[in-house]
Image (tube, rainbow, N blue to C red; front, side, top):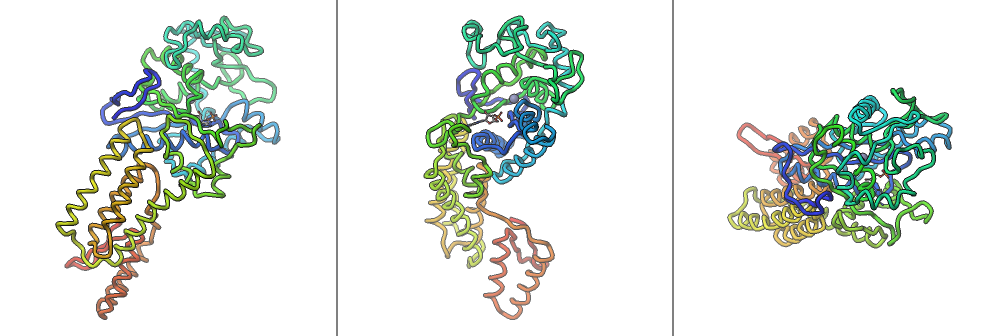
Length: 468
Ligand code: AMP
Ligand code: ZN
């Protein structure tokens, strides 16, 4: 399994820190508004990465934070005349709704920056102790030049950065020893949320959050750290400096970054008026379509959002869902249970598409090619499954299709949960119909149950059922 590592600019074989386990950290959104479709890209992409690792049998510990203390949140709170806490809580809740719609699994842990301040104060303290940071008038800065590997992720060298140093000088930060130094802790301004610290009542800088939360929930060394490509510099570069200076170990082995999502070939921005939230898209499309659209391109290629591409995605997804629906429909009236020798051979023939899918995903998560392999399987299903197929053959094809689409987080076989008593009632009704030799009704009931994912088995001890 290979993945592109921003650190080395190469596709590398994935070797986990700990066998059978993947520890990954994905920088989450700053919660001051509904998430936009650009924010949705890393969520969908890295959720798919997680799902593929799980498919391969890895135990994945997936941590993704919410940045719930930030200038933008404070600004919005002032505009609305409410607390910053109210703003961040509201948009975390809305973000989780959007994630559910896009079938993004909840992280193993979603830490909140405001609940981890203690750990940040502690890490900043130890950076000062080790000589990597200093305090000036209540502000703590990281001494960038003291970390010799600074620039290794973004492949920038300190002298290039110096040339651009004017832009790095932010008002009020002229007390820094060096323009390249960045803030770890800053004193509060009037009306801002603040926490106690040895340096001032204030709040942490953005970068220190992730170093602290990643260490707390995943340990000092992790496998994968990920986010959008805009985070490479300075956010991830600064995270590396903080974590490696504090822990004395390599922070993350692999750094993954998704390319940007544009709209109608323009950068998405409020001023251009082409800014779309996931919530707006959900009024027009099932968010599964948005997910399918995001996965139709490789995550490291820029992706352009347009009405045409969304229509094409809707049609593409429908083709897959229809194939699954057709299999279930045929299962309802299949005449025989067991696969024939010919069907066994045909089923073995469909293995080729699974291999194609895995080869694509093993090659730096090439979801575009993985989707193409799913389409080939769909074509195969549509040409080999029909009213003469056995139930076992249809079921095997359906399971194979669902296994692959699950990796992509696409729901093609919606199972409505049936209550046990409803199932039992239908089974009793089917038994009665069989007694009366009303086999059409008995088959119909079996079909209804199958559509809801309930498989019946006629055994000597009576009818048994299980979930597909
Ligand atoms: P933010 O809330 O701005 O920190 O963004 C949260 C995540 O969304 C980060 O990983 C960003 O890199 C990513 N992101 C923001 N805008 C876009 C975009 N237009 N396309 C792709 N990713 C984006
Ligand atoms: Zn981060």
